[in-house]
Image 1: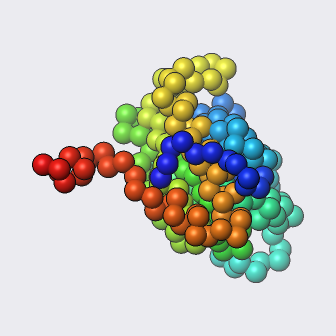
Image 2: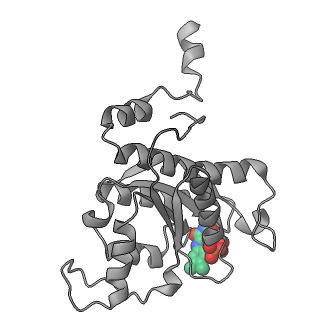
Length: 218
Ligand SMILES: Cc1cc2nc3c(=O)[nH]c(=O)nc-3n(C[C@H](O)[C@H](O)[C@H](O)COP(=O)(O)O)c2cc1C
C-alpha cells in the first residue's frame, strides 16, 4: 500500500472513531483522536463516538432485540452513516477491552459490511497491544469490513503521551495520522464506483521489509 496517498477528485467521506477505554485520561481515546486528525487532513468529516456518552447494555445476543435503550440504535446509526471507522482498544488481559467488544457485539453487518477500518492498540506494558490488534482484525473480517494493513501499537503508553495528551515522538505521531489518512483515503475510493482503482491500489506491490528484491537480484 502506498504511503504518498493523495485525495484528488474523490468525495468527502465520514470517518468516525471509537475508543475502547472509558478512562477520563485515556491514552487510547487520545490516540484515536490523533488518527481522526489524520483523516480530517485528507478532507474527511470526522467525529469521535465517545462510548461514555452512550447508555449501552450488554448484548443480549439477539440482533433483532427491540428492548434496547435508544442509545444502542443511536450508536448503530452513527456507525452506519460513516464510510470509515477507527477502532482503538487498550490491551486488557491479553485482548481487547470488554467495553469495545460489547459495543461491537451490539452491531453487525449492517453497520460494518464494506466499511474501511483502521486499528490502534494501546498498552501499559512493553509488549504492546498486539493481542488486542489481532482480535480486532479478526472481528473486522467477521464483520465483512476492510481492515487496512497498517495499524499502530503503542507500548508503555504512559511514557509516550505528555500531560496535555500530545505526543513528542514524531514517528509515532506520523503512524497514528497515517492510519486515519488511509482510512479516509480508501473509504473515499471505496464509495466511488471505482472498485478497480480501489483493488489496484490495495494490492499494489508494497515494499518488502524482508528484502525480497535483494533476494531476487542475488
Ligand atoms: C483490566 C486491565 C487489564 C490490563 N491488561 C494489560 C495487559 O494484558 N497488558 C498490558 O501491557 N497492559 C495491560 N493493562 C494496562 C493498559 O493497557 C494501560 O493502562 C492502557 O494505557 C489503558 O488504556 P487507556 O489509557 O486508554 O485507558 C491493563 C489494564 C487494565 C485496567
